[in-house]
Amino acid sequence: MQTDTYANLYTLVKGLTGNTSFTSSEDTLIQSFINRRIFNAYRRTVYWPRYLVLGEARTVTSGAIPFTESSLDDIDTFLRVFKDQPYQVNSVTEYDFVVTADGAQVVGDTDDATSFYVDYKKRWEGPYNDTTNDDIPLEFFYYAAHGAVADFLRYDKQLDKAMAEEANAENYLMLELSNFMNQRNVNLAGKRIRTHNTQQLRYSR
Image (tube, rainbow, N blue to C red; front, side):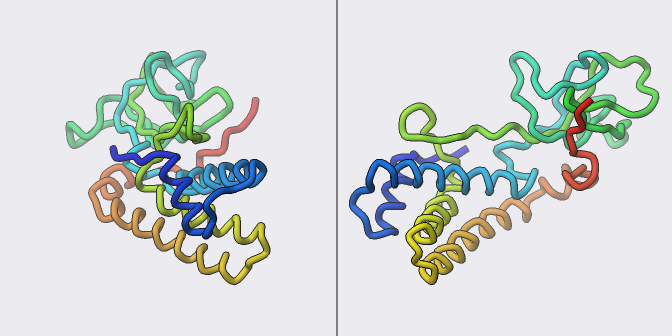
């Protein structure tokens, strides 16, 4: 999927604030603001295509489907759990589950299954910077820029300008959200999504 660079994002933030450079302490703040905004966008929904994985086989370990498995992406949010490969046939057994610190504990008679097929949201790839992790997801680029500017202006006590930039940031994010919400992802993968308000709390044992 498309990306842009942290350097370009940083340059845009400078331009929007009317600065040609920041002090070192302001640089640190700007980087924090950028990452805060990107993470906020990532958390807005489980449907971001970049992070959505459907029907991937996952091995059961110690009675749970763990968040991490060698050679596979780390799981942030479990969405659906199936007995067999979903989306290839019309009828596939789907299981309820409870998320704990160990992963997803599947509920019901699973016939001592050693693996399940899982829909999930991949873990966030940040924090981002201009050296070791500079590929910014394009769908978050302008939201992060205007959001970071709003945060900086608020820090600088320019509250009216900050509110205007906050509105700009939200508009960019809403455009990106509406783009994929109009696609088939939500219609198919989202029929029975578990959310943080239902089964996504990670209980400690």
